[in-house]
Image (tube, rainbow, N blue to C red; front, top):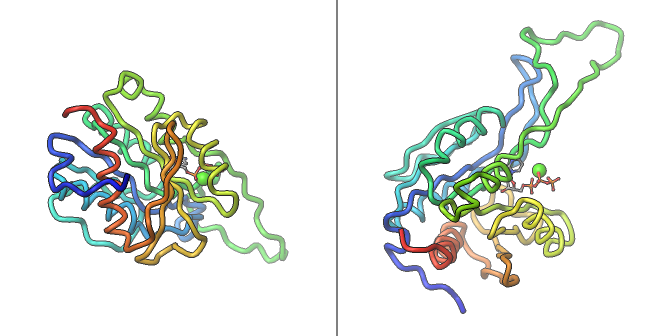
Length: 226
Ligand code: CTP
Ligand code: CA
């Protein structure tokens, strides 16, 4: 059954969204990051606001305007995103993790620019794993008590359905959204696969804002009364 977008289907809900990449500094002039335009997360924030929710958006480094009526916090690194999310988790009734969080950060970020030393040898960098912001939220007391509905995304290069379902279970989230097709980064169009305990269903391809509205309707259907 295709969920219809009802204008105020999230009235009374408090929706927290992460969007965009994170940037992990190696030194003051360089770092590592992920490909992510932030467009899908920003579209979800906008659609949730249009649906009557209060919306807070935690955004990595992106070049996008803040959707009308949405409170935005800008961050750079995964640790900053984690802190910004944790500060809002007691407030939120829905958490949508659309950010492409860098899985690793340099173990040490140099205070001064690392210079070539003339030997021709590259510096050896060590990495540590970043915290899993979504899994932490899904394991929180409020999520386990049914007061915080967590939605994850999965970017997979192959075998999307099986990988995404495994990810959904591993993260302990009731709803996971898979990106169909490899070439959606930065584009306005996308196609999504929804996975929950009941099974999976595809949302037809379309502009990210249309998909965001369909996703918002799907989330609303799964929530109890606000
Ligand atoms: N996520 C997160 N914090 C992280 C990594 C991922 O909150 N440190 C969230 C993403 O925002 C997304 C979901 O977890 O909603 C899945 O992200 P993904 O990168 O696909 O999964 P990983 O668990 O990082 O696994 P892998 O990249 O190895 O497939
Ligand atoms: Ca990852």
